[in-house]
Image (cartoon, rainbow, N blue to C red):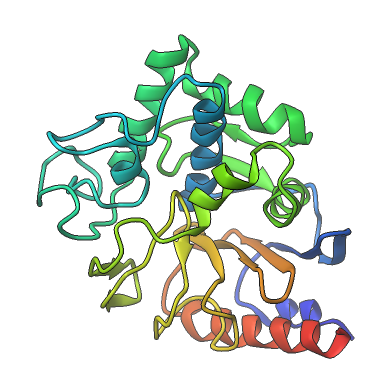
Length: 272
C-alpha cells in the first residue's frame, strides 16, 4: 500500500498527487491530467521563467525593480518591502521578509518589458514548451493565477531535481537563501526568525510549524498555495512530492499535510 492511498481520507472532492525521483514519477494518485488552480504554487514556475530570462541576458537579478533600492532578487524572495497584494511599500528593501504576490507581478512586468513578450506567453515558451507542460497556463497575475496538473508539475519537479533549462550556477540562485537573516511570516504558519527564502522558492530550514514534514531536511525547497496545493523538493532524499486538491487551504490542511509529508519521507527512506 502506497502512502498516497491515504489521500482517500482527505476532506476534498478531488486530489491528484505524485512522488518523483530523478528517474521520473515513482508513484501517483488520482487523475494525473486533471487541471487544478495552483494559487501560489504559480510562483516557482514564474521564478523559473525569470531565471531563463537571466540566462538569455534579458534581465539580471540585480536589476533595479520595484520600490527604490529594490531589485528583481528582492521581489522574487519577498524582500522588496511591497505589501502582500498591493504595491504599497511597507518596509525598506532587505529589511523584512514580507510575503508579496504583488512583487511577482512587478517582476513579470520587468521581464515582459525587457523581452517584448507578454509574460504568460514568455512562461509558456521559456518553461512550459521545453518541458512539455501542456496543461500549465498563466491566465492572470504572476503571483497566483496559474493552472496545472499533477502530471505537468511532476515533470517540473523532475526538472528541479535534474535541471536542464538552467545552468547549475543559475539554478543555485533558486535554492540558496537570499538576504539571510530576514524575519517574516509564512502565510498560515506564523512568524519565523529567520524566514528563509530563495528565488521563488521557500526554503524549509528549521521552521516549525511548517507545511512540509518534520522529517523533511532543512534543504527542502518548494511552495504551497491557498488553493490547497503544494510542491516540495528534498535534495537529501533526491525526491519530490506534488499534491493538488480543490479545497482551499485552511485548518483542515495543517495537520494532514505535515503528517502526510512525514509518511512520504519515511517511505522514501525505507526504499534507500
